Length: 586
Image (cartoon, rainbow, N blue to C red; front, side, top):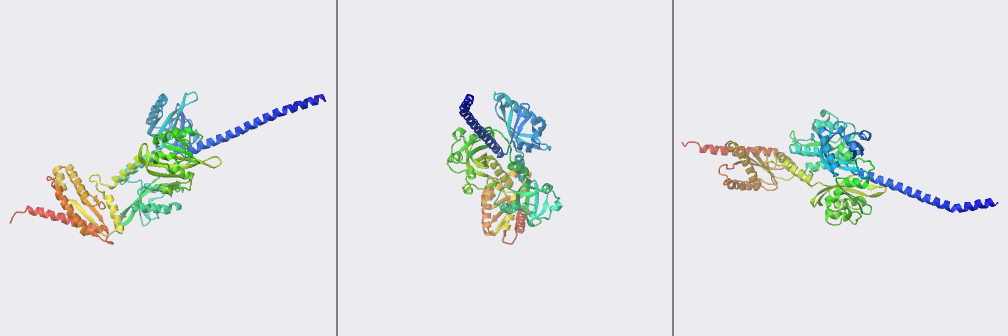
């Protein structure tokens, strides 16, 4: 009995301690579960960051062997993750590229400073060459000992190819080339045929729309019509059924021409399927959130659902001059001030708040799923006004709830300047500064189809250019042609299309202008020539002229022929007058 009482007393004294220990274990278990959830949230957040970048991320050991890479790297190289891991950089580079990489990585190892390699070549699994830009930095363990390198690789192959396309445009040479008339292919070259997987014989005579994705046909017609009417300059994109019976992406531009005497369309396109796949691919990874954001070459920021900045990377600091410490945690549109000089919604806010009317602030809005990209003119970039390309996408947690948005910004000011310069070179004669023959013919075709009549056409031919070349050399002849450009540029109006269409041949289109007005302009031209020649007694400028007027229904080709004939009559008349001066008196 006494023993039972002692045992009961011992049990009752142990119960509070047991309860206390149980509560502690339950609290620890709750903390562990919360930690696991936060870890999953963190890993998901890292993954979402990688899902919204279009570059390759990799890590290698000090010997140059892959230890980690993201899926974008696998797709670009053409290898699986298992094949890439432990692969040495000798295996996917040319000897020259390996030498450059060895020198750069050695410098990074010795200095500890990040470095960049531009325009280096890698060899993919299928043997193709890709041109890349690489940003590399040294990785250290917790003790500070170097253990390898990490890098961001950007595939710039398409960019370099785009530059080549622009050069080819200036030279009137395209990738895939075809001619269509009345909605059907009349000619298609081998490069364009390769996109379809058919022969040119099978394609000629077929509808231009039968292989276009049904969802893209309305927008394709709209973009093509705008470009043909001169209202659009940039190429447009659409999906096309390829030889594998899958829809791929092409980028196209068109221009009006005449083919076999009828209005037609000259088109050119390139296959951008791979670029689209890279843009739309979901990049899987578990990388560290802050280091990846800070390492990205594009200016990048992340904003939570309350409009508060949670990340502001190094590239963003460099672009705006605002340090992350002075921006992270700020809200109330603080992030807009460095770009616009005031607080206002920017692209990231349109993802967070769909009620905002994005079209009120931005033009040319492109949507790809839930992401949006636009070009923004007249913004502050790197201390001066420029043009930005910016892309934004929402971010979600494990439960699928929106947690914020990520926005990347790229300065494309210089790129746009180059594009503008190339467009100028494509439409102007390099010697005289007047319009080129191809542009003149496009404009003549456009005005011929238009409603603005009458249209007058002036044909001009420089007299005695050959004798100037023979006497003073071709430099003197070129100088004479430049003088023609100067005179025509001062006499004709801004809306007139003055062009050099041959060696010594010039032409001017005067839309909405009758013959009487043209005659007044020609009086000014002759007066201008007379004044001009006073300064050039050794090589006076003489031009034979022919003029014709086109009314609705006449056809500009016939009017051009008539003006040409009148111009040659003028030239023959001058020649007879000169010959008469040398005849002996009878």
